[in-house]
Image (cartoon, rainbow, N blue to C red; front, side, top):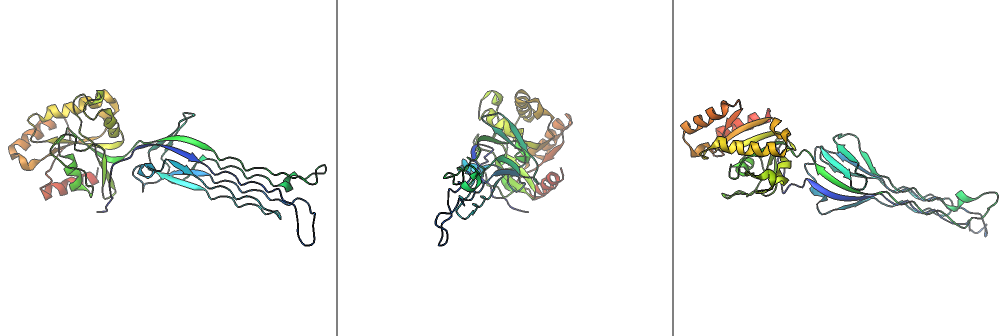
Length: 325
């Protein structure tokens, strides 16, 4: 099983991108041992670097930009005498996860980044300034001026990750999601026996499958209670919901419906996502209690799995099921 080192998920960020300024043209005249008062021979400046963005499946979130809020490409090299043109600056490419939405905060234009093959230009580098050679004419044989390089394009962008994982673990606080993620993957979320241990989504990898531990929800989350709607939106960004139900809960169906009601209030699209119900903590209840809970949910036509992180057989079965969904 491949490992993926995890930490707090960063799924939205404000980013300033500044393409490189063009190099200045040279206002130079030919001077050497043979020629004391030669004509203009100033070269053009090089173009500033462009900034591109590309989606990469090797990137899972936007943490690269958490403390690096400004991306700036290099400046073009200035022109020189003897008609020497300045070198164009190298282009800069930033990578983001597939499913990233990029919004221009000035124009409101939106780009959805899904193509992992083609870099997309997001900031154009400035054009290199022309040297005085370019301004020589029949009426102006000795231009003493050159052109400054153009400014690179500057954009203020808001990046939001729209898909953070293949599978999202949801459920009421203390449903065992964090412990489950740690058992399924190499992730090391905070685990505790008190509500809201998980304050930020955490992603772990099961082979090539990304699994997100999403913070526990409570009744009223869609109106801001508990950890609020800030975390309901994370669930929108998963392909499949793995709904964890604590078997020690005396009213498991009520707990399930509490979460589903919050889903529907926040966004009807959450109710149509593929869902698997996982009955957790089988080691703490009797076989009869497990059968009773299965019957309750099977009557509603749900796909049911059971597990305990202390039961290797159930964990192996769960891993096999998840990797084949």
